[in-house]
Image (cartoon, rainbow, N blue to C red):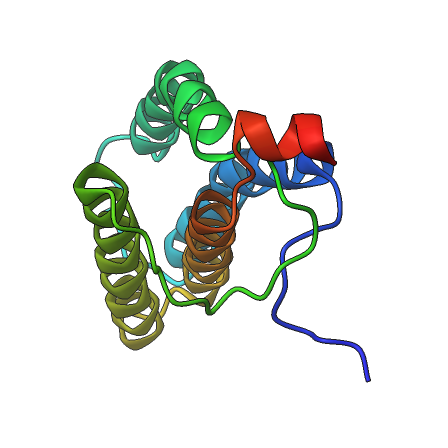
Length: 154
């Protein structure tokens, strides 16, 4: 039986998925705002929906290099396909803090998924749910990473 909740087999696959899922927030926001505009949620004489779209596009592009550094750091010594839900048995305090921080981020994103659903934004909810997966995948890779000594012995 194949495990469904696992990380990809290759680091590059996870990295590529992270980029696709990060930048997919832009078309999801466009879809949501266009749907809201067509339903009459915005005043006719109000500002353009292009303002929030361009604002989010700028935030996405500016944060991409920062996220690339974080993704690279979290996936050093990528272990291959591992279960998403793993226990952190690390004795290193810094590694435990990073692991707990990623769990907290995943829980916060999970709350965001529910929030978006109740707000009537299923497009954004799907994007935020994918970010929950990414957070847990990078945590699993970080917790199960191979150290330099293990790579040499392997």
